Image 1 (tube, rainbow, N blue to C red):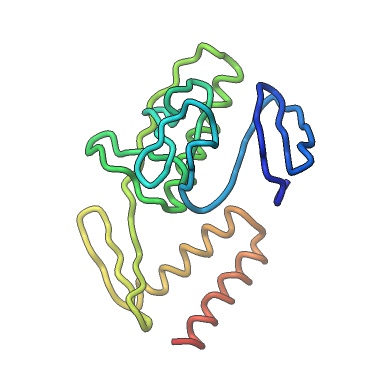
Image 2 (image 1 turned 180 degrees about the horizontal axis):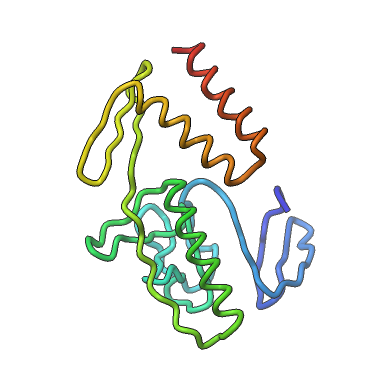
Length: 184
């Protein structure tokens, strides 16, 4: 329901829009935005962390709640080894989303199930540096050059194929590539 703002949430009932239209639910999956921008009024009795993100525990549950999960940019999830908050990347959101979907599936079958803590994967970065040149930062190595610049588009294509059709993914990747070529 894009462009339908949630104005209030009650157990199994959602209020949407200025007219406060009601919508019953059993499981609420709420997706929104590209930044952590909570102002404390999103839910009662939640803890905000760095950058106005929701504090989450090691199972990505909103602190102090045990039945509300959050992922992506609004989740202040941290690396359990270092305690450093994870960067707001697509990779993080996809990994957390996959983990939470498995956790919800497990809890739907057995409400008393034990959920293993979330273990983030080490992030890898490709940074375009201008022209047809990019830098790839891996776990113990750094690569740079035009090959990495092309790799960036392969990764974009692979991601797009995971969320849309092959044809649309190819078209979007080709458009991005051509825009860069024309404006370089």
